[in-house]
Image (cartoon, rainbow, N blue to C red; front, side, top):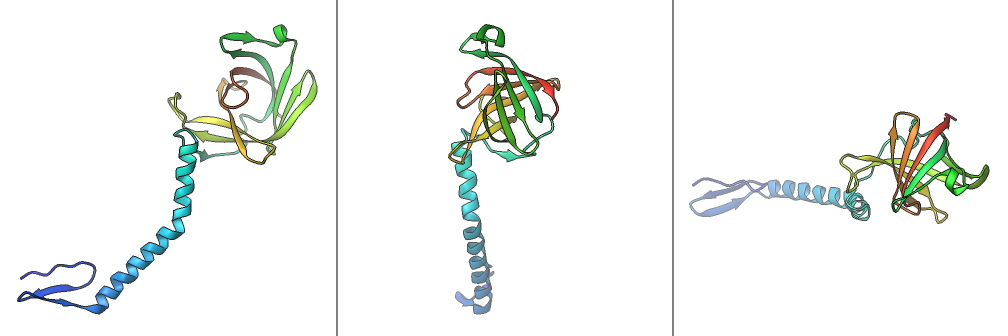
Length: 179
């Protein structure tokens, strides 16, 4: 009769089963090591799954948090919100966004500093977009990151921001400096 190997030496002879206890203890050690690895990596796995679920079927892949293409000052030229077009001319409002290399994000309205926070850029896959896109994340006063805009460039000096968070709409900016 042939024998079967189940991690230890298991042999059959004349319908009697013979177990080699040292082989089984090695198999048990391998199982315990595998269990320890699972326990160590379980929190990481839960974190990845929860990020994917919370992120609307998206997976955040960190790349350069402050890509050079974003760094600089950007002058608002138009916005489309619910089918209506807004510009500095028809609103009387000028708006400049400044992305700094150290992660600072400044908003100037009509020439005055209106708000400031920290930002980071992540690469993400989002429903409705064919490829992964850059996401501008802003730090909230409570200390958590808020996904504000899908960002894409038209050439190197025109930035489009499609609102995800509080800034709903499609906004278009032109570069005025490379700080």
